[in-house]
Image (cartoon, rainbow, N blue to C red; front, side):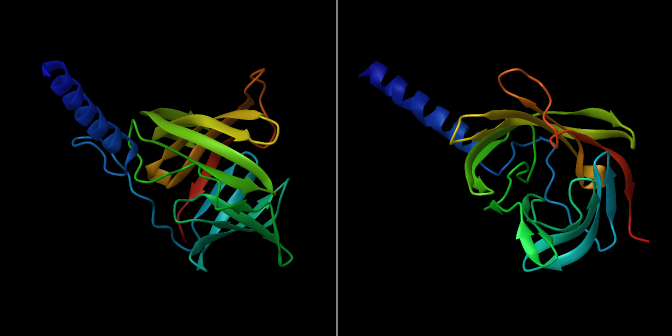
Length: 201
């Protein structure tokens, strides 16, 4: 009976810890950052593209994108996760419900994951905030949340190991890397870094 009571106490304690650990309430004293409020005209230039905030539309942040791989409009959730690209009035590269790279509030130890559709391919992902650290890019040095995880295609099991650094100072991801889970070779389109950030004029 004594052992049963001890086990029940452990289950309650562990259950509470897991609930807090996976939830959206950061532990007391932890650095935590909420989703950013963007402004029309705010812009970011990465090594592969630039995005300028056009404001809100249909409950999403909308950006004008100029890049080698895509130019047009990009719709993102209030969590800054990609929902779709729009070119000449047509939706392309849709993510349903979204590409969940970020989940605010961000704080070290937080974990999340989801299943989603990308171009009609079923995928799953899992991420964890591993550290709050300084990262240097061509745009400068920033204190950033390092988030690591995996994005996996469910039809063939192919997994992409993903690491992103989100810097509250510029309200966005300042670096991202993606590599093949099996051979650790970088994947085109999954790696970039911030070159310039500009506030609205």
